[in-house]
Image (cartoon, rainbow, N blue to C red):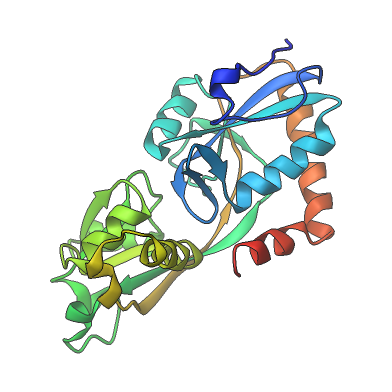
Length: 261
């Protein structure tokens, strides 16, 4: 099926030529800077730019649209089959509604950072010494094995919020004591928030203390088990080959450099 993007949606869609091939919509997290996020009506980020580059090379066969969505909603759409694909989930056995993944987009480093108040008390080991601390995570965030185990045995308290910015402000206000997420994402978001005019003054005094590396997590494009158009296998094969070529050419490093990394 061929389709042209509606002009009214142009601000939210990354759309290629309307006379290209099969239309494919990839949904992406709208609040995960620097990887995928919505800013001033534009979908931006490292993964967005990487997939744009892939889309350009695949345009003869597939017309890609990258559509931002809240992460939890995106997972729900993927589970129901309303969404064909979503980026960037980690691999998790419990997400049985995902039946295929692209090759890894990038390997993220998931850490726990804490504020000054939390670290005013001697704490040597995570999670053993953090039983009195509430740890913030993004809603729908795939917890690492360390956090899952700590939550199950009640050695830590987990609090969910919608996105990096909300969690960092809660950290600055001492509403949570620590925050778990990708290291680049945390630091990039805090840098942007401190440079915004106006901005929340409590952020100026926020110092992040990295206390633990939870895991290295590879991020993917995940495909819905309930969405199986006839071109699915071919699309995944072509996307993987295109992403691999871009990665070998150093495209990921060039994109990261544009975001200050």
